[in-house]
Image (cartoon, rainbow, N blue to C red; front, side, top):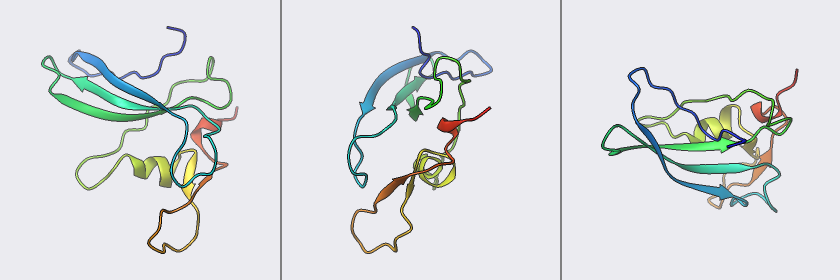
Length: 118
């Protein structure tokens, strides 16, 4: 496989199986197609595969074949992984408009880790 989409290492060599993935082309709140490659999915963990971890994968926008893979882990009770994607270091953010009860608009960021520079 030329591009490594997702890698998780666990200290006790837990069996990892990729159950499902989806290549996302459009997101609500953003006009037009995404200008970067986004994949989402679940990874089953453990011998029985009864625990699933959700992931977002965004391919480097600079040089995906040579850039290092970065894993940003977040989540848990009360903390969605979408927080890191939209508020911390992802390629999208909510526009600064005050929330009015409708779908919040999204905008591209210039500081995303997908645009890593030397």
